[in-house]
Each structure stands twice: as structure tokens, then as C-alpha cells.
Amino acid sequence: MKLKKQYFKIGCWIAVAAVLAMFAGQYAYAGKIHTGLVIPPDQVIELAKNDPERLFKRSLTRFDATIHDYTGLLYKQERIRGKLGKEKVVEFKFKAKPYSILMQWKKNPGKIDKLLYVENKNDNKMLVHPTGLLSFIKSAKRDPYSKEVKRASLKTCTEFGFLKIIQELINEYNPKIGEPKVTTKFVDTFKKYDRKFIRLEQTIDNPQDGKDAKRTILYDIDLMIPIERHAYDSNGNLLYKYGYRDLKFNTGLTDEDFTPKANGLK
Image (cartoon, rainbow, N blue to C red; front, top):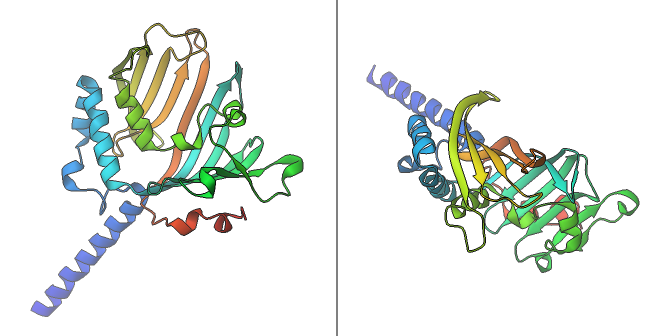
């Protein structure tokens, strides 16, 4: 009888471990997140209402300590040189160390439909697959900071990642000389995609023509990350919007997943 009870207990623990492992892969709630870094949802909301800067700092600490890699879809739309482009959908894989990003355009690619960048590899340049007449070329090297890249996107591949987004939000609380003051305030909480979000609104003092005057941030309460960002100029025109879907954290990506050969770029 005692032996049966022992087997029953072991079976229960195995079942619990399996469930935790499943959630760890999908949302990084278990296994990789230290208990001391988890904040209850009601406390996250309180911080958003009363001290957004502290919330962002807690988010940064938690994400940096617990998330090593992630995959998902990036939905982006940008106004470049006054023209609002079509919404693009980009599938991505990202690894924090070394900084590695693979992007594949699933909707509305421009001059390229695949991009690979690994810090300090490939002469520290992007490997890209061109579209159109040059699509027969397996890959070409491009400087991520070139004028050509800046004409195609508001941000470079070196600015990708939730860690950099959160750090940018924190930096806005201590602007450098000449940078505008940004005020962040809590708006409300709501549900979207079967998840709970906080809506934050940012206003920028004395915005320049065609630059951000107002921003909206949708902050995932459980994941503690900004999952969507929208920006508008002083006339209410959309400047850009970025959103993330189908996120999976700590999937076990390795350096091999970011080689040119593994991604058809060699």
C-alpha cells in the first residue's frame, strides 16, 4: 500500500513537471524564471498606475535574467519619408548571446525577404536574400547602418528585441540634453488575444514636425513586456506600429541555428 502511494506521488510530480515544462517553452513562466522576479498581476497594474519607470526597470531585470532566446511574428507598419507603407509580417528567431537575429518576411517583403545578423560574424554585416531580379543570389552582405537600410526601415536589425525596447523606455526618464521630455501615464487594462494588457500613453513635449507626438504602448501583464507600440505625429497621422504574436521563449536556440548554411544563405 505504501509503495502504491509512493508511485502515485511520483506520478503526480512527473505530471506537474510536464505541465510546467510546457508553459516554460511557451511563455517562460516556469523553470527559467526565478520566483523572486515574478510580480503578481495586481502589483504590475499598481506600478503601471503609480510608477511606470519602476515597472520598466523590474521588467528589464526579469527579462534579462530569465529569457535567453525567443521566436515569433513581428507585425510592422512604418511611415518612411512621409509615406505610410503596407503592413509587413516577419517571422523571426532571436538569441541574446551572441546577439543573433534571423528574419523572414511572410507578407509584403521589400528588396529582401530574409535577413541574418550575428554580432561579430560575417564581417559584422547582415546577410540578406534579395527579391525580384536578383533573387537567384543566395545572399549579399549589407551594412546594417547604411543609407540603403535606413531608406527601407525606421529601425535596424541591431535595435531588435524586448530588452532594447524596455531599455529605451527607461532611458526616456532621463533624457539627454536636447532630447524631448516624455511623459508616460496609465490609461486602462483590457483583454486582447485572450491575454491581459495594460494600455499606457506617452506624450512628447514640443514634438518636431513629422516626429512622435503621442505613443500608445500595450503591455502584457503576465509576460511583463511591451507587446505593441503605436506612434502618431501632432496631426494624428500614424508614424509606425509594431506588434508581436505567437511568442515562444527559451526554445533552446543555438549558434548553429544562426549560421548562413542553416538558413539557405550560403
